[in-house]
Amino acid sequence: MKKNLKTKLLLSSGPFSLSLLLSLGIVPPALAQASSDATPAPAAGQSDAQPAAPATADSAAAKPDATPPAPTGFWERSNLLGDMGGLRPWLGNYGVSVGLQETSEYLNNLSGGTRRGGAYDGLTQIGIGVDTQKAFGLPGGIFNVSGLQIHGSNLSSRGLQTLQAASGIEANDATRLWELWYQQSLLGGKVDIKVGQQSLDQEFMVSQYAATFMNATFGWSVLPSVDLPAGGPAYPLSSLGARLRVTPSDNWTVLAGVFDGNPAGNGVGDPQTLNAHGTNFNLHDSALFIGEVQYALNPAPSDPAAAKPTGLPGTYKLGFWYDTQQFPDQGFDTNGLSLANPASNGIAQSHRGDYSFYAVADQMVWRPGADSPQAVGVFARIMGAPGDRNLVDLGINAGVTLKAPFKGRDNDVVGLAVGYAQIGSHAQDLASDTAAYTPGYPSRSAETILEATYQYQVTPWWQLQADFQYAFRPAGGIPNPENPSQRIGNEAIVGLRTNITF
Image (cartoon, rainbow, N blue to C red):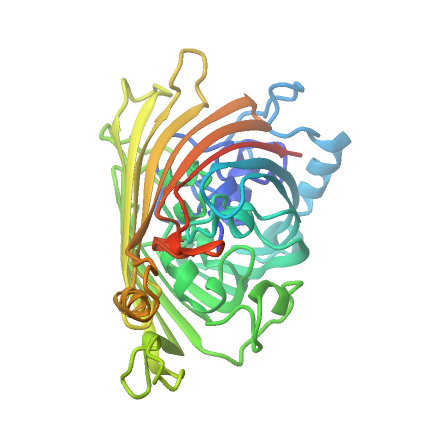
C-alpha cells in the first residue's frame, strides 16, 4: 500500500528554506502537516508537503532579503537543531540544504480484524537539495536526493487486512533511496522540467486538506495503490521518468509525465523486497503516462507586490493516467469461465493497458478575516478505473478540516474524513461465484474508512497527532481466515504520532 504516505523535512533555518524543501517534494504526503496553513497551496509546485508558495532557486537568489530573520529561540525556531552552530547557513552560501525528520507512531486495533493489539512503526527521512545557481552558477536548477529509513512493524498487513492502510508511513523495514532528480526552470519560471527518479505522490493527485489525515488513502489514493504494478511510483517506491510543468498564469498549471510503470522491476513477490534499496533504476517494463490540469481559485499572486485576493482560495484538478502493461482479469479465465468454477483453466484473461480518470477539489469555505489563522477547508477526490482488470474500480475520499480550533492554538488542526474503495465489478462477480461453490463464502462490495484526527503543534519543530479510525467491511468483505464463512469484522483503530524536524 502506498503512503499518504506519504508526507516535513527542513532544509535550513529560514522560512524560505522550509518552503524550498517542501516544494522539492522531499517529504512523503503523510508527514505534511507541521508547517501547512489553512490555504491550499498554489497549483504550481504543489505537493503533499503543501508549501505556502513554490520557491525556486533563482527567485531566492534574486531576493535574498525578502524574508525576515527566522526565530532562533529553542521553542520558536523551525527545527530542533537550529542553524547547527552555523553549519546550515554556511552550506546555504554554497547552495546546499540538508533536512532530517523523524516520525514515530503507535497504532492499536481495538476490535475486529484478524489480530487485536498494537504496533509501532517509524520513518526517518533525509534530504539534500542543491541550488545550482549558488553552487555552479547555473540559474534555475535544483538537484534533489532523498532517502528513507523505515522501521517498526505494519499493523495494516498484520492485523487489519484493509485496502486503505491505517498509516501513510507503513512499509517494510528498509534503508532505501527514495528520490534522485534534477529540475530546470525555463522561460522565467513559467516552465520547468524534472528528470530522474521520482515519487508521483509529491505532485500528482494531491489534496492539501486530505494530507491532514493519517490513513494512506488520503495521500496516494487506494485506487492506484491497489491497481498499479507495485502500487505505482509512490512512497516508499519511485520510478525513473520525466515530468513537465507549465504555469502560464497564477491560476493555471499543467503537469505531464512519463515514468517506468513498475517501480519494483521484474520478478515475483513483494515489490518492496524486489526493489529493496530503491536502486533498481528500472526502464524495462511498462510505461506510465500521467497528466493533470490544475486551476487555482483566488491564488496568492506570484508577484509579492501585487494585491492579495480577498476571496477564499481553492484548487481544482482533473487528471488521468495510463499504464501500458498487461493486466489480468479479476474474475474470468481465458475461456470466459469464472475463475471460481472448478472447470476453469485458472488462467485469467489478459487486458492490454489500464487507465484511470480523477478529479480533486480543495476549497476553503470559511475564515473570520483575511489575516485570521482560523479557517475551515473541505476536500473531495474521486477516481475511476475499469472494473474488469482492477480490484478497486472506484475510489472516493472527502473531508473537512478546521485550523486553529481553539484560541491560542493557531497551528493546530482538527479534521474528519471518509475514504471509500469500491471492489471492481469482476472481483465482486468472483466472490459471488465462489459462494456458489463454497456455501457461506461472503460477498464483496466496498470498504469504507472513517477517520477523526487532531494535530497538536507543540513547537514549530515538534508535532503530536491523535487519531481514531473505523473500518467498515475490511477489503470489501474478504473471509476471515479463522472462519471462512464469515467476513473479517469491522475494526476500530486508535493511534498517536509524533513528528520532529531536526
